[in-house]
Amino acid sequence: MKKNRLITCFLLLVFLLPLQLNAQAWAVEIDLTEEAVVSMVTIYPGEALYSMYGHTAIRVLDRPNDLDLLYNYGQASIPFDSGFVPRFVSGDLPFILGVADSIRAFHFYQEYEDRTIYEQVLNLTAEMKQEVFTYLAENAMEENRTYIYDFFFDNCTTRVRDLFEDVFVEQLRYPEESLGLGISYRNDIAPYLRGIPFVKLGIDLMLGRHADGEVTRETALYLPLQLTGAVEEAQLSGRNGFVSESRFIYEQQRPDPQPPAFSPVVLMWLLLVTALVLTLFEGKAPWTARLFDGVLYLLAGLVGCAAVLLWAFSGYEMTTDNITLLWAWPTHIAAAVFFLLKMPKGRGGRRIRMFYLGLSSAAAAAVLLSSPLTSQHLPAAAIPFIICIILRGAAATVREKGKIHARQNR
Image 1: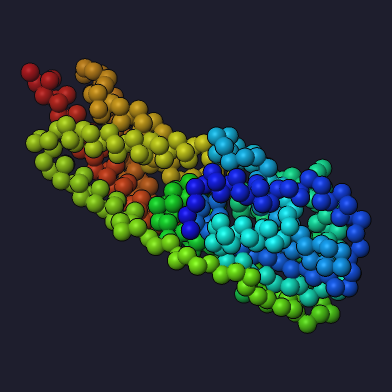
Image 2 (image 1 turned 180 degrees about the vertical axis):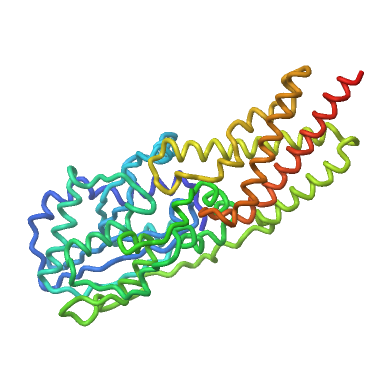
């Protein structure tokens, strides 16, 4: 079911925050009983953008101690307000290890987000359970719980993966095929974005060439469902498997998101057809052509500005070295104004426009022709858009050059 995002975030605070500030002062002193159960809980992807990859948490259940806590590394320490996006873009987004009552947390994910909840009971000795619990309790203390979020390298899933490595050291073995080695980060996240192709296009444009590097052993299992599958098949020395029991606590009732009727690829090819028609019949609709060019270059400029911000100021490795900037120049925003207002004026203005548009057209052509040789993936939807820039830039260059020669011959 769809809920207003503000209400959802408010309910998240109401349901999941009350215990986090005071639960761990006493938890570090608790000795778990023989009946204690430690499990990994996976929350499947939701409808909201922040939940589209899923979530990982650890549950500690010990009924004799009246204990049933869910340890959640995926809790933002700042509110979803106007400052959230700037801090995310700047790479300074603090997350915390939050602690909540498991049943209340499950109720939230079930009733308000309708997300599948999958639990894997870990096949641990009493000593191992105590080690995991103590590790979590100490990390949830106020002085230890905060970390700076990074989608690929430091998130709610990598924190649980690292917990297992720290506690079990070399006792834990994952099957080789579960690590997803040899796959690029970009292709790794692509299946989660199938139902939202416009979001996928935006993400692809903002990710640089590092996102096309292959996942390594050190960085593998950074997505919730990946870790779920690996843990299911993992082996723990001296135990019969790492998981003793798996079950669905809840299964979503809503249908999976369906792609929109018009995909970005179809839309961009229609845009290219429009550009071709306007180029062929430009003399009959000059204002329409100028408006089209203004919108085209404005969109390219906005993409470029976003790419510059994420490269220069975010601190995220995956958004650096972005070839998108070779064809989506931030200065295209100014070019859009030039198209609409015919600025600068006079012969000098025409020469400036001719030089700029010719250069941008040539740069876009170079990117397109060299794309098979570069290490960065070029989204399919970007190809017709780049061709539009080449075509309209070249057409405008020829037009401006013709006007200059016409004036010189008077």
